[in-house]
Length: 310
Image (cartoon, rainbow, N blue to C red):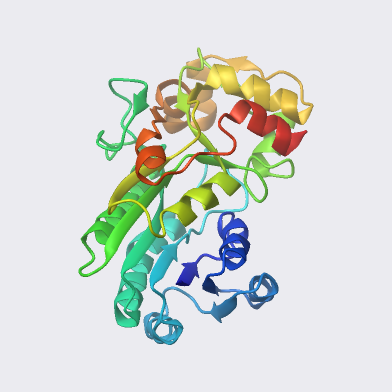
């Protein structure tokens, strides 16, 4: 199968491209960097060096590649995650304007399926603690995250309504493993070692994780399986902050995390940080396992953290 991977040098793309090549697919990877293009070629794929916002160049390149499936893994997140001052503007533009351009390219190339990266941590903090794909998303979230959710929903709607193309949206959980914020050399690992990843209040916010290799595996499963639609791609064990952060710190060899009251955390990091820590909802993965015939190799962050960080 001919596959065009936009974001081939990102956290998932770096794991996905070699797996696709190994499975016998003809892969073309999109990146903005010539250095990244060399790594993609070394993995056995063709490359296109192009900015997703260069619409005409992108469409021409995708027409030349003639993919049957387009995989949209593009983001523009900062190297370091700091909830106090994170700016989602660049990724919001990728998810809105960039998605429009990718869909135009997919249509010009004759692609029949589009698989797009979304997020499983945007469900509204209401009702049950673990959500399926039909539950309401947090479109009224405060601050910059509200804009990020709006842009993500826009992207999902574009993908699902693309004429003549089967749209598949994969709502991934929080990534861990190589090249992620939670990797041993990642920004959040550094913050945890400095004891700057505290448990806020009772730490009741529920997080859903996914190892990047399992995210890549679900993406491969979605190439040919599953009806068009939205799928949560997470591990089997959504977990409260108070439960997973101590285990993460232990896997890193760090000291136990501090505990801070909600009022202190709100003053230091803002409303959204407290909402995530105390009200976030996890995501159920039953639909993806059933309809994509997929199982996460790392069924739980518990052993996943130990293997990735030990």
